[in-house]
Length: 85
Image (cartoon, rainbow, N blue to C red; front, side, top):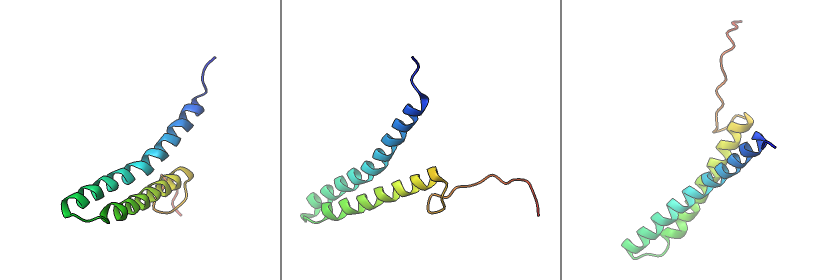
């Protein structure tokens, strides 16, 4: 029995959504921890965590716009039809 290619396609899409969301959160959180240790403060991690979350949500929005073909920050470039009016 051959596995359906759509199953792998959807698993790839789900993992791509997760990566697009988690990478900015982790990077910003680690940058916040680093800044807190260097500056002796305690608010950069929380602030940059939320910045990373917003960036992750934006990434998901752009990806979903590209997949659905809607206009937004995820611009879809259509091929010219070659027909002139």
